[in-house]
Amino acid sequence: MNAKKAVSTIAVLAVIAGLLAWAFWPDGKTPSSRKIVVGSWGGAYQTAQRKAFFEPFMAKTSMQITETSTPDYGKIYEWQRSGTASADVLDVETFFVFQAGPKGALAPIDRNLLPKNLMEGAVTDFGVASCAYAEIVAWNSQTFPDASNLNWSDFWDTAKYPGPRGLRDLPATGLEAALMADGVSPKDLYPLDVDRAFRKLDELRNSTRIILWSSGSKPVELLRDGTVALSTAWNGRIYDARHEGLPLAMSFNQATLDWLWWVIPANAANKKESMEFIAFTLQAESQKLLALNIPYGPTNSDAWSLLDEESSKALANSPQNMDRIVVRDNKWWAEHEQTISDRWREWKLKLEQ
Amino acid sequence: MHPQSQLGNRTPFVAVSFLLPALLLAAGLAAPLIAGILDLATLDSRAVHAQSRILAAVLSRTVAFAAISACAATLTAWTFALAIDSLNVPLRKALLTISVIPVVVHFLLRTYGLHILFGPKGPINAALMSSGLVQNSVPFTYSAAGTCLALTSWLLPISALFMHMAVRHVPSVLYDAAHSLGASPWATLKTVSLPQTFPAALLLFALNFALGYGTYLSPELLGGLEDVTVVRLIAQMLREGRSAEAAWFGTIATAIPVTLFVILTKVRSLALEQLS
Image (tube, rainbow over all chains, first blue to last red; front, top):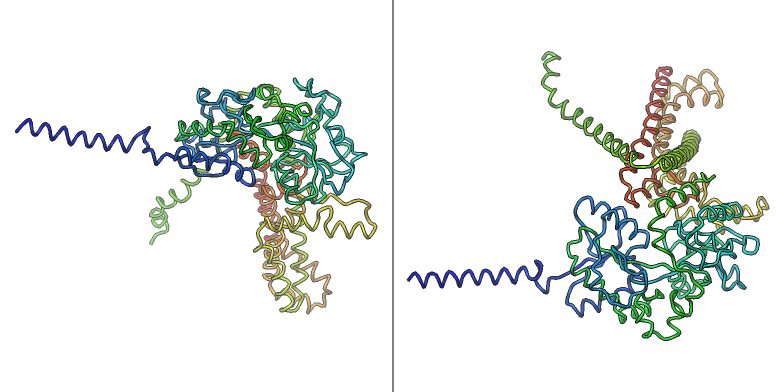
């Protein structure tokens, strides 16, 4: 009787243990309930990511992806302070990776899961570059029908191209452009001569009006309305605008290459799944699909062999464009960002001496 | 019941209603200041100097924008209210309704309207250029002028309503007296309308200043390179995760409109005393 009781007790316990294991496997999730929240920038870019990354990843892993927007960066610091996070993976800009990572707002990246052939500098302790874009000189082709292949010297030439200038509200863009306009060769750009760059920026300010932008859609708007004659812009935005029939033109000549990054907030609930997703998006095939949907270049070198010549020509970091563009030195920026940001603020307020 | 015992019964109520919020407010103001002092202690002297220069410049620019816009909105609304007061009732109501319509239109839409109206290819610039007054388009947008223009247009509708109410509250017996004494319209305006509505205009200026001082969207959407205001700087600090700095700067910045409000309220009381 006692033996029967013991057997039935063991059987009941085994059933309970089985149920618990099913309910909490693995890492507290049943296989079908695994899901992550991914934040990005919306518009044509997120649509392209959906086709290239989200849908194929969900089909392959049966994991669910809930899409959201990349929040204001201040909110990510709030998540850090409050011990929460409303998203698992976020698409962010370079400066944020270098700024927020050391402050503890981002989770470390597990390099072991990533593909091997990623471009140099594309993996850091707190972020992985998911695609490359360029900051280029853009103009309204109706205003300057004969203009072509413009560079930063042309951008500073207010006699030849009269009118206000649109400039991204980011010290990296302003300083790099200023130095190249002042004759510094792209290969000698880093380390930046900051004083010289600010002097050149003053020269532009004294010769025309400068309008700063921080949202990617703004330069398109400014050029379309004739508020500015020339503007810095992201190549994908100008490509889209041209696709929609707007008379805008751009040049990769001396364009500065930058990346968009995947990061995981420090308190993200699903870090392992997030890394799985990030690794998937960096596969050559995923990178090729993204480049075909929006002209943002791959960071996995193997993807180039999957793209035809015509498609790769539109990408900032394609082998055809690499000799005309400048790669931003993000290590240098990580060391100098704080000091230069303050100086940039002073310059904006005309406090520079 | 004895007044003392009445007060005695209300003591817990008074404590909860006034003392608790006051303590919370004091703690709310003190916390960011302490955080800020600790934050400042971590910076080197060059950084402190740079920060002080930036903050001083931003504060002075914000005060200038708020003062210009508050002044423009208050004076325009005051003139408008006095002007429509002498009109017949249907016309006055029609003009008042038109002036209030912008209140129900979303601010972003109104700002976009300003972009179209005052943009380089907008009707205002087209009219100015075709009249030969200017050769090139005037930079009304993305400039200090744009910031003031947007702030004024934002403050104006409510200001018009406010001043209209003030003008309507002037005792009609005063107008009757002025009329019976044979005062001209100008003399009535000078001796009755303006002094009677001056305290309201003063209060409106203080409110408009506080609103203009603290608004984010107008300077962000229509401001130029140098037109960084207090809230734009605070927003930027928060984006960079410098919340301690943002908090104490915000606390210090709050002192300006509060001080102005206290001073103008005192002046208003004196003006009211003189009227009575």
